Length: 249
Image (cartoon, rainbow, N blue to C red):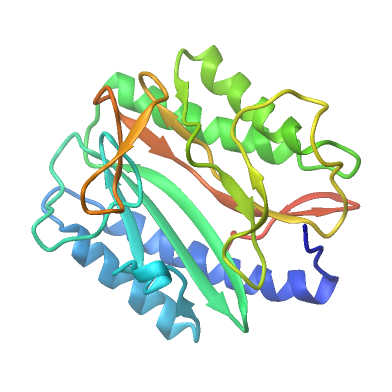
């Protein structure tokens, strides 16, 4: 069942989103060659706790950190580590969430570590552009799969693969609510979108094929063909005035 949020609930989620967005920005400012992903995790946790919120991921189904940090061919759910040190030319996807007053904000971005390849640059630009295409489809009277169709159209036009096994989701007083929000689909199909629905829109796009595998740590997901992967995400409310991005500072 899709739980629609009231205006007051969306306002609380906007604050959770602001906190999560600030944490993501500060982490991005800390990305550089030589830094460890554990150090990035500490930046995010301090930002969230100092704002009076709680890290959303830490302890969620046993996840051990505030951030998911996924490097190069890692797609999502990478675990920060004091031995994982970023090097020039890497890309690192950072996913962070915050809980404020019982509601969740959730956002992600992929950052360049120093100078990166032309292919990596194009992957990051395309994935972010696909996110905003999906957000633009979050309108009252539209259909759920309009979102995925928009994301897929941008990604595949650039020759990239759209991950199938992991998708966006509803979000509110729980991190994962109905419905699943795939990054692929046929426009004009699926649930009719209504005001008060709130989704985490999060394209995960691979430079190569779309199949992925989970590593033996039980969390980290990697591309099966070893190609690079990027991940961008915003929490978005559907309103009568159009899509409202909640994860902005």
